[in-house]
Image 1 (cartoon, rainbow, N blue to C red):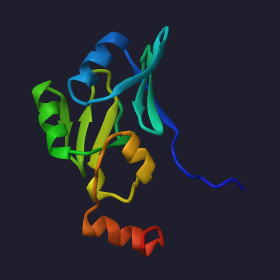
Image 2: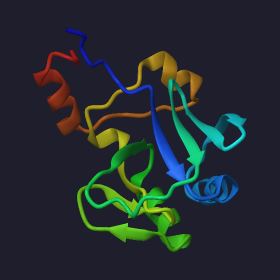
Image 3: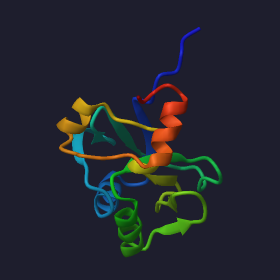
Image 4: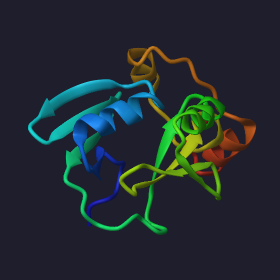
Length: 143
């Protein structure tokens, strides 16, 4: 059987693509990887978010995806500044204007790890908390 090894991208449906790029651009620093009619690709180093125009379903309930950031406190402040609907739960949870439920977690607090060469390419120097390192060690993923 094939083994799951990661996520290449997340597809996110929004109403209006230009409005979504503006809204998310007021919260997160990102580079636009590319754009096609009705689609935009937000770069996250070796991963990306594929935004597509035309969301028609109701707001997400429990279904969500998690984004990893270098500064969770700054993410919460940016979300508050744009008037995002912040939801209760672990991390910083919000629903965007199109009903997508997103969880924001800090890189230092979780097992998710970017390879050193990817971090260098993204011009980031990030560390892990002791708890995250212990979790990685328990799985044999960190010395």
